[in-house]
Image 1 (cartoon, rainbow, N blue to C red):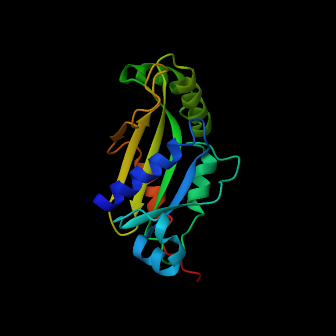
Image 2: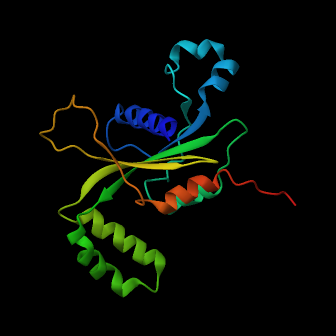
Length: 191
């Protein structure tokens, strides 16, 4: 778990350097030793002692936003080549205080028969809630091992811009995302 936690932290720091309001980003997690053997010219750039190295993937399609059905579809159709032992997804989300549950319930109740309409209503209610907080969800998985979910709340306007980022372990926060990332490693028979 230490290797995964260190790698997830490296991903969080990398994305944080780009500021807020970014599109979701995917990272392949590869063994650092294998990467160094395949690309000796990278030795100076690799983190000392890191068992895993995150490799940012190409930009995702423009229609993919955090939590969108397009992101679900992207994950459902993604696979990894040999040598990739894990992956990480970073997306911006909205978090609400527990008291906001009644607001969401009121928005959803009339629409439960239509899952798409209920999803849109929930997103709209969350985006327009006066106590919403923007956050970053960082989910990392190893294909044959553990997963780690981290949450980074958007700092308040008066926060020190040079303070280290505050990452919180968020167990059970995004089980569908964790499952979706594990599914990118499922072997599909061509029969």
